Length: 339
Image (cartoon, rainbow, N blue to C red):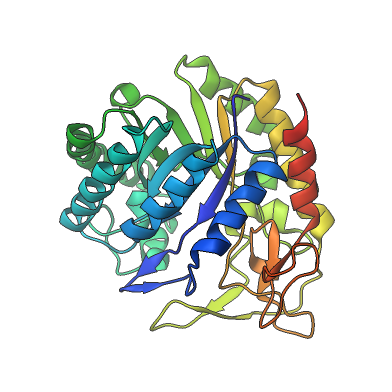
């Protein structure tokens, strides 16, 4: 692959609150350097909902020589709010690109289920429930959602390209059917589950055969035994605060399986290499609000992160940083280190 990528979370913003409370410049700079030097990445997808944080992290990543995928991630926003966010971020991304940095602008991620105006429902669970609950009429519902999203993206891309002169894409869910002619990359949130394991590689091959460079984002799995079989839903062992959306607890007993998470990522990266994917962005470096608690209620079991976040203490592998690498960290590093 040309782009050996990692997704880096600057904080997902919902109702004005960020999922990442702390955003210390020296910590972020050090983590981005680790992504380049120890994980052997050549590209980073900087995601989040705060334009200031996105711009800061993107600039620090560019200073390290990384290709930057500048990726605003709106949550529960209206169309007008999303367009305003994209306009702001496109201006910032162009400011960075004009310095000589290699920047790709991602015009949102999974917009049809994460935001308002494409599906009925007040939150993600309601929208997905209405979309997939009844087989009768499902094809028509999916087609209608794609039609609404495509119309919105037609406007959004014009807003972005008016301000940004680099390559532009959108991180698409598999059921979303779009006109890719307006984009420079076909970018898919592509996660393998047991249900599609036998056709997954063929699906990747079909994507690449379309001719436009393909990027894969959003792929990964949680850290409990069996998570890879249900990877798109493997975070659903978490119970959340109904008011804030913050993760509260794990809903049962699960066996920790770092080796399984590592194997899952290794297998997918091998497939992407074999099939000629242009760029892949592992999801993700860390989920800072899913801490590792060995004594109980270990939220890291539900995390896709390559590192386990520690509460109130520093790690030993990288003193001064409050996390420790998982086995998946080593697996990704070994794969990306290959010539």
